[in-house]
Length: 272
Ligand code: GLN
Image (tube, rainbow, N blue to C red; front, side):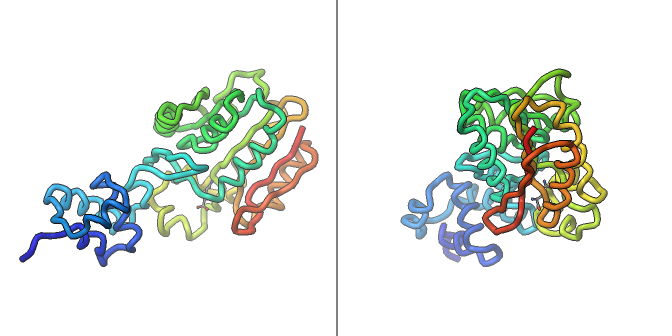
């Protein structure tokens, strides 16, 4: 039997071709171009075994982001683990709304509630180095991931542990509050499908109607916002109307929703 070549792994029929290639790139620590130029070379057994270990995890359904330990968001590579939600392109809509708000306010105080990997807070901190960014999470494990990402990406921010605003020192004021809280309805069948099976349940769903975290954040935000401050939250595809109502009920003004790249009303916000 001839030795296994890199090509055999790149053409691993058990996985989508892109995924096989990403796993080979990870194990070989080589670019796509290098691998294609060397794909007729024998694959070292130790590397083959390392590839197979990752392939088995993927074949068992684990999300690519967890198998690789990273995911790109806003042009930055974030480390991710099963302690945190995998950053999604939809959430870039939230960061873009934040950056638009911060455009004329360079030294703003920014708060990200439920930061997970830190993708939102760190992307804002990197784009607005003068902003004073605070990020919270209930989970110490998530905060450790966020802290490591901030360090590696060179972002400066303050991390605080606790449930939503409980993580914060009373009396603090913020110019901008953002959050991508758990918003999936507890009965949504997607929770038992695909990547979501592997993500932290508490980051995906409140176990109820999907609106309880959004309601709590909306209700309390006015107390923590500076005059003229804004709150923007991500929510589910069918929640925009309900979230606008929550924001209005809490006394926020000029409440509006914005669409993600898929054309879905994905975030809603209001101003104090
Ligand atoms: N956007 C995610 C999804 O639908 C959910 C993230 C969240 O609940 N905040 O898979």
